[in-house]
Picture 1 (tube, rainbow, N blue to C red):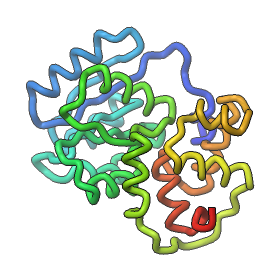
Picture 2 (cartoon, helix red, strand yellow):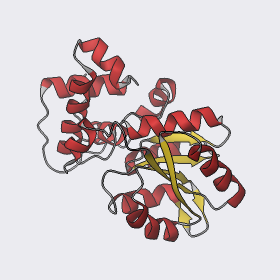
Picture 3 (tube, rainbow, N blue to C red):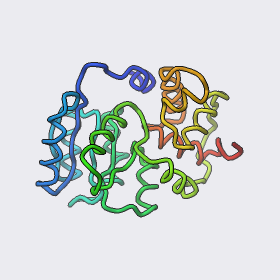
Picture 4 (cartoon, one colour):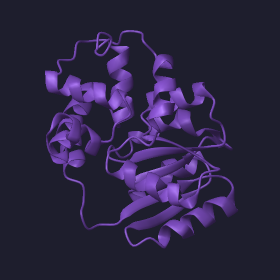
Length: 225
């Protein structure tokens, strides 16, 4: 199945499969148990290192990975690009105790769907899992506005042709709008917005809305908008 199909036709019945990657056993176990209590979420396992995540992703087939930033064998953020290759449709949400801009920017450029501070409530964790699975960006508009100027603006190779509507949708993503809010702004269905996001993500070779935005900025596609 293509990225466009995966984004535009999310499962309505299957539970969201979540893998927790964190080396703090009590935290990871508690988080997995809380998620397992939700009727639409299935905890498929826990990994305590990048190496374990590399082994478990192909076998557990997670829809969403909650990824710790600091792991015993490496940087969880830096590992996202590699781990994404193991299952193209998996979304990564970074769990972090750090809100340093360079960490969050690196996560966006690696393909993460967003970030979640370890100090946030369990309700916010559940919401983040569902949002990431549906293709939304797990980030507040205020934080996105703060980070946009920090994204890498060096021109990438090649030329990408986006339609006017796709560019319009990208510009609204840059404002921090959800798919529903974008649909309301441009007066189309949410399904249509999802298709636009899927198409532009495929064209840009992105795994998330945030990464698509990062690539678009790097290639100068939004510089004049």
